Amino acid sequence: MANTVSAKKAVRKIARKTAINRDRKSAMRTQIRRVDEAIAAGDQAAAEAALKDAQPLIMRAANRGIVHKNAASRKVSRLAKQVKAMGSADA
Image 1 (cartoon, rainbow, N blue to C red):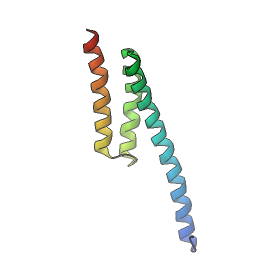
Image 2 (cartoon, rainbow, N blue to C red):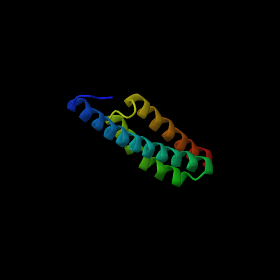
Image 3 (tube, rainbow, N blue to C red):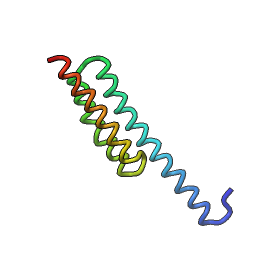
């Protein structure tokens, strides 16, 4: 357990930041899940709309260090590829 005043404050700051990061990561995962569900349902319009909502959240998480920049780019790329493939499958 922290003994000094500064260490106690650091523990409080870390707890606050951890909670914020957990919420942001959860929101990002929720948006990714919505894209996946729309893809699974075969609804391209909903998938495109969900991807449009998910992309800024994923990249914002990367900018804030919640996920790695390359991992975020990979997620966006793979989701976009899946959504795009839905369009070519229908045509």
